[in-house]
Length: 601
Image 1 (tube, rainbow, N blue to C red):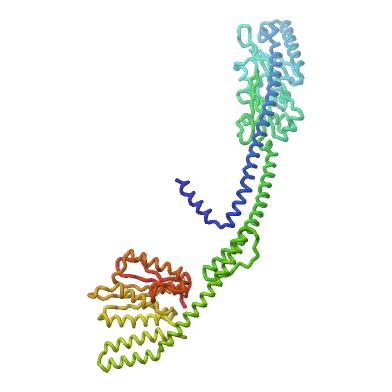
Image 2: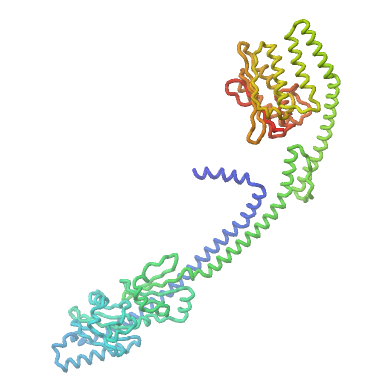
């Protein structure tokens, strides 16, 4: 439904657009739209291709990290399993109270040698601890600071290890405040739960290492980290951070990473970062490699700017070209249109500007020839007709000498008075007044008041004839009555009312001539009667005749004789212009109303 509403409006809007605008819009659409579409498609494919390539590289890097960590965990798995080789280590720790002093010393020496052997296998090991089930501790470290067992057993991560189902584990980052020196920094602990042959808990083997050694960073990674915002985050299944490349590269401290905790493991928005994950075979470590989408697409962003600039520059060039071409095309068309408008008002002027040799120029040249021919024909015919009518009018005036006519009518009137025929005398007197108004206007302005007086005299004659059956009501302001009007306008309309609207001799016919000012300051006069009115068919015929008056106004010979409605309408159009008119208002069931619109003069 919405489509059916706006589509016709859009079509109508485009249809009503000026030709100049249509050309400009057409050039812009033809030039800019394909450019924008092609640029958008190329940009999207480039972004998608770069993102896919980046994901492949990140995936490859993640796989390499996964392999490296798997090797790391397997090595420490073997190292921690080496402790199980010595059966004495499995059974004896935790049984110190049953040993003699010599056995205890031998036990301690054996364990210390084993721990030293483990510690020396990997340079990154900070400390190796063996804690029995009764919390007896054996340790060997690369530092002088010893572990405070009472502090160690209170740590949450330590408590979780004792209840862990996994015999091999790697903890998250934790501080080293359980050492006697309360030193700064963080550690990662790799360990194994030691079990007796019967499966009972025997103790824990714990190896503290520097988290940096989990995944040493190459220089290429550090460059890529700054350039593309790559980061590697290693955590256990509980979400505890084990390693983060930002700390390993020095961008943040290990303490900040540890305090941030699980925030680094929150799911990053796919709109901001590209995230790929992996998992080690041992230790339940989860590897998450992230790359900043904004930094990755930074080059594409620059390309986007370049693309937008190209589109804008191309659009400006297209606009300039379209304006120039459309102006070149529409300039002669506009000149042709102006000349046609002038021709509509009767002013026939050819287009003076020099024309090109294209189709539009040929059209303008043909139009100029046509206008010149029409103007010549009009001038010849019009002047000839004016001369003919002026000659005819002079001849008519010579035939009817006004003074001779007035004197003759006065003689007839006096004769009627002598014969005591007052009615005939009055009719002759009224007729004389009408002739004075009709024939005595040369050199003098004809006003609406004169028209009213002429109409009143005509109706007086009709009242004498029809025994006072007509009543004329004049409702025209005094100021309006002083305005000019072409002669013999009201009387023919009133005559039509008498001839066609009056048939009932048993009642009086009322005729009203009403005048008022329009909002534009023009004069609107309505002549209405309460006669028989006109049928719909006759109304349509008269309306059509009056509409044709506009087309016939320059006709030299009118087919209609006398001063009918069409003749008046033509004279109004000729004398006052196109915007003024005479028309019959739609019939409302009683009488007839004729409306006249003329300017205030």
